[in-house]
Length: 575
Image (cartoon, rainbow, N blue to C red; front, side, top):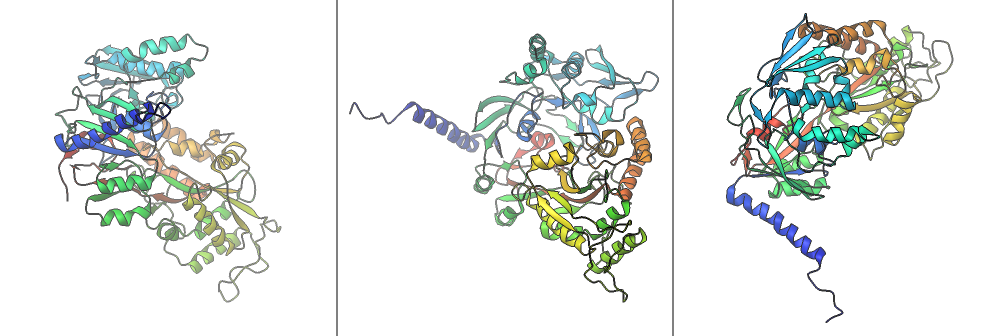
C-alpha cells in the first residue's frame, strides 16, 4: 500500500475543484437565471489595454474600458457615451470642447477630465503604436473643470472626431504609478505593456471577478455603470445580466455543439458556412447574419510593367466574375464589392461607381476586355475574337511594344489559411487566360506573402483583404497616397496620382462632414477608374445564439457582439 500513488493527487484535486466550479456556474444559471455564457475561440492574450491587439482581449476589455463616443448600431453615427453631448468646435481656436457625464470608476471614484487628459498624455508620451497616429496632430489637452475637457489641434483633422475621440479612457489612479515606474526604466514602452494587470479598473457595464488561464474569464455586472437606467439612442441600458462567463473553445466544432446543447448562450466568433444548416435546423438556436466592415481585393504592382499600364488592369477587372466568387466560392455568404468602402458603410460608400463586367456573360466580358486591350495597342497572333466576332482560344498576348507578355504570378494565402482567397486566385488565373494572359496562381505562407508585397515590393499581383476596416474611410488615403509608397508602407500597389493626393489631403482637413463625403466619393471614383486594387467581395459575418435563455441582441455592422448587446440582453426565451 505504501508504494501505491494516492488516488487524490494534487493535480487531480485541482482538476476536481475546477470541475465543481464550472458545474456550479452551469447550475447557478438555473437558480438565478442570470448568467450569460459566451464561447470564444482563443484565450485573451492580455488584460493590459495598451498591449491588447488580439480579438479576444479586445472583446473582454471592451466591456470594462469605455470611450467618449461610440457608433450608433443603426446609423453608425458617433453618439455620446462617456461624453454628455456632441463636441463643440471653435474654429478660431481650432479646439473641441467635450462635456462628460457623471461617471464613476468601478471602485467608486469619479471619472474626471483629469483622467481624459492623463490618457491622452500617456498615449503621446509612450507613443503607443495603436493610438499615437490619432494624436500627433493634437497640440494639447486641458481640463477646463472636472467635467469639461478641451482639445487643441495643430491643424484641422477630420479624423479627430471619428478616431481620436474613440480611444478607451483609463484611470489616472490606476495607471499613474505604473507609468511613473515605467519611465524610470531603460525601455519605458516595453515596461508599460508588459505590466501585468490582474483586475482592470474600468467604468463599463462589467467588472472582472476571476480569470482561470486556459479555461474561462468571469465578469460581474458593474453596479456603478453610468448607463444603467438610461436610454441612449433608443436602447434602455442595463446590464440586465448579473454574470458573464467567457469559456474558451479552441475547436469551432466543439463550440457549435456546446451552443446547440445550451452549454453556452452565444459563440462570439464568426461561424463557417458548413455549420449553418445544422444551426438553422436546431430549434434552440438562431443565426444572425451581419455585414462586415471588410474588404477583399486583387492588387497590382504599378511600379513596373506590365501592370503599370491602366488598360491592362481594367481589362482584367472585366474578366473577374464576382457573381461566381460570391455564389460558388463563398457559397452565398458574401456580397460583391464595387468600391474600397463597403456598402454597409452607407454614408461614405459611393453608390455610383463603374461595375466592371457585372451582368455580362463570359463572352461579353471577353469582348469588352479585348476591345480595351486592342485600343491600347495589345496584339495577338490569334486574338480572342476572330473575324466572325466569335470567342476563340487566343495565343499569348503581345504588349504594345510587340514583345510577348511574360508569365506573371497571382500571389494568394495558402488554402489552409484562407481557402476562399486561394480559390479566387485559381479562378482568376483561368478567366484571364481567355485573353491570352499567361497567369499563374501561387499560394504561399501569409508571412512570406506580406514580405514580398509590403516589404520588398517584389510581386506582380496578389489577393489580400482587410477583415476589420475602420468605419472612418481615411484608410483610402493610407492605401493610395503616394507618400505611403515606401517599404512596409500601406500603399502596397505603388499607386501615384497627384489628383488623388490632393483630394486625400483635402479630405483629411475637411471638418465639414458633407464636404468630406464629396471628397471621399471622388477618391473612390479615381481608384475604381485606375484600378490599383480591384474590389472582390465582403464576407458575411454569421453568428449564432442559443434561444433558450436570452433575448435582445442588437445587430449592427460587425455583428451582435457589441457593447449595445451586452448592455441590453435579458433573460427570457425567444422563438
